[in-house]
Image (cartoon, rainbow, N blue to C red; front, side, top):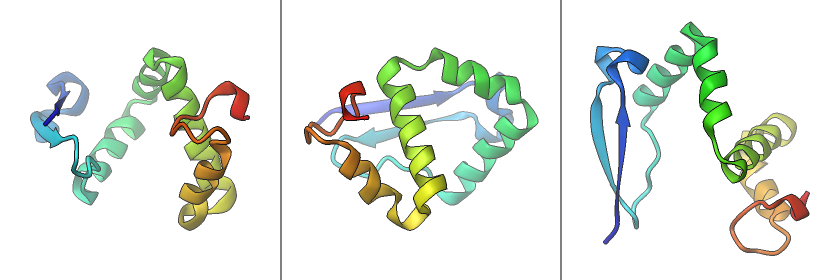
Length: 100
């Protein structure tokens, strides 16, 4: 069983978000609503942090973020997942440049 560890720096997130979360590869790794709201507040309070984060993402992760965000904005939250799935033409579970 593969484990992923996500660490949030106290400098970035403040003392309230400091901690380590462990996720099993076969479980949902989503943030709960409280954690998501805290993360949103961190990014709203420091917009440069979000720009830096996006700038450090690899090309595939940036593409996934843009496609998911655009799909949610354009199609609405309910149908965004199905639209992103439709965009994955080669069905490799990855949105590659050739799929655009």
